[in-house]
Image (spheres, rainbow, N blue to C red):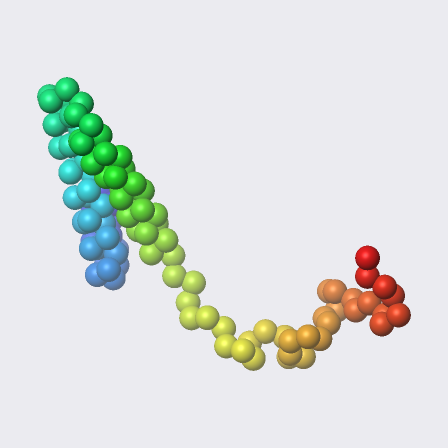
Length: 101
């Protein structure tokens, strides 16, 4: 379903690839689960199954994070006009003779 939504919205190719990887990992995880069921839960397959679950989470988060684009980063002059180190109206400066504790 995720892949179909990505294709329908004409999203960038990197998102399509991540979606297909996620779908492939889920299918592989199912195959490993069936193999565990029919072979009596061998220890090696348990490790493969746990690693597959971690890879699915990582890929799902990568896909989720790739769906939001916040645009380019602001340059050094895009913040306050006063520059760094100066105080703004929201945070008043302390007098120089007040000790900080």
